[in-house]
Every structure is written in structure tokens, then in C-alpha cells.
Length: 169
Image (cartoon, helix red, strand yellow):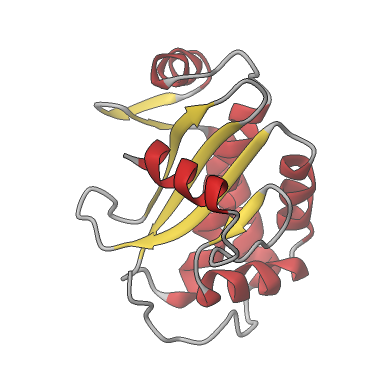
């Protein structure tokens, strides 16, 4: 399903999906403002630079799905030279928690960037069985992502992150 969506967007050359960077793309103004505010975090800036040097394109979106209690990173598809990922953040997550959760998920994207042989869901499973902890069926976690989330939370603590409005997912 996401592969079809991405193919349509890429084929149309649509500018309806704002680009935060060449490889990390926001699907809403709220996410764009999150990425902008995240620039005050050196950890977040490092993650974004790392991802911009990768073979991945990452779309970030809000979701209302009950399958995403907070946030998740999904492998969408791979073409010859590019791998597509989607990061989803639950729209009900408190505004002050969004950037740290996004950093957590971007760390997962970096983990995938560091594994160029991962080109499908089975490759993702093998990678996280090797580097992560099982958190349920097809749900994985890493110590690095948890560390990045805590670090970014410290770096941005006490700052107004972005408007407290809840996006329509």
C-alpha cells in the first residue's frame, strides 16, 4: 500500500509533501515545525545529517492507528538505489514528547541505513533479531534508540517545542 503511495508521489513530482531535507520528508506543517525546532538538538542534527548521507528516503507522518501507541518506523520498499521508510507518530502523543520520539525513530532509520543489505521486511527482522530486543510480533527495540530519545529529551527540555495543537492525522 505505501509503495503505491510513494510511487504515485514520486511519479507526479508533487510538492504537496514538504521536504525537511533531501532524505527526511515531512507530510504536514506540524512535522515540518518539529523538524525545525529539533535543530536545537545536536543529537537530532547529527541523525538528520547521517540520514541525508544514506540511500534512504524517510517520510514522517502522524497517524491515529491503534497499532501505533506512540511511534514506529516501517520499511516500505526498495528500488535499485533507494530504500523508503515511513515513520509514524501517534497524533495523540503530547507535543513535548513528539521530538524525542521522532529522534528515537530516526535512530532506527540510522540503524537501517547502516545495514545496506536490508531491502525488505525479512531483512528488517533479521537485523533487529541481531541488534535489538523483541518487543512483540514484528516489534523491535534497541538500546541505541532509547538512549537517543533520552538524550534529545535532555537537549530540548524546557523549550517550547512547537504549537500544542493536535494534528489531524
